Length: 28
Image 1: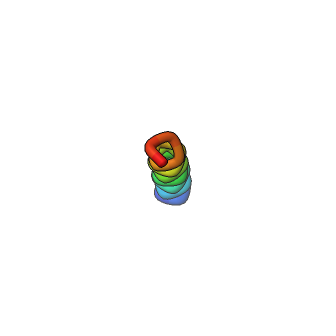
Image 2: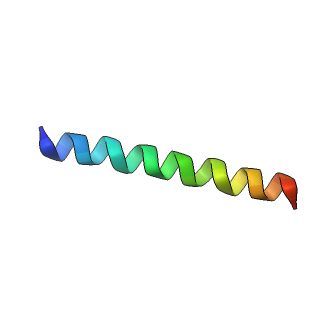
């Protein structure tokens, strides 16, 4: 269960990073 939660958290972090990168690309 803890492993699954960590995996979900990593997925959310990766999605947030991708969103930030695409926002930076749009701004630039």
